[in-house]
Image (cartoon, rainbow, N blue to C red; front, side, top):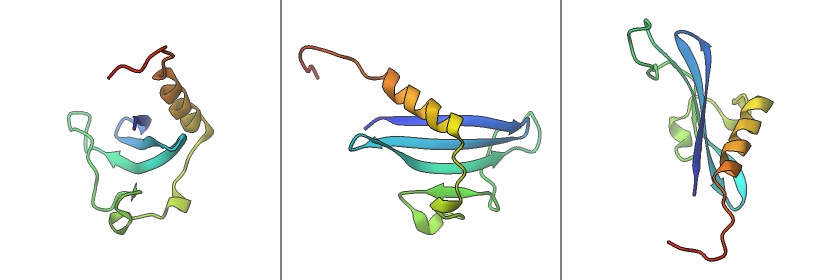
Length: 94
């Protein structure tokens, strides 16, 4: 399974983070979160009031998967990152 993370900055102090994984030849949304920081000197962190979705722990999610925004450019970037990791070989080597 291959994981892909897409990060989009909405401002200097906020970011949206999408994480995807490949399951049965489908790119599936694994998690989505909006992270923020107090100033540029601080690191990005998930606030207790923040928007958060996790496929593996839906009880901890603050939004349902239907409410998660998935812009077309994010979906295309995820697809391109997955495709870029494929290689064609004659024989499988571990």
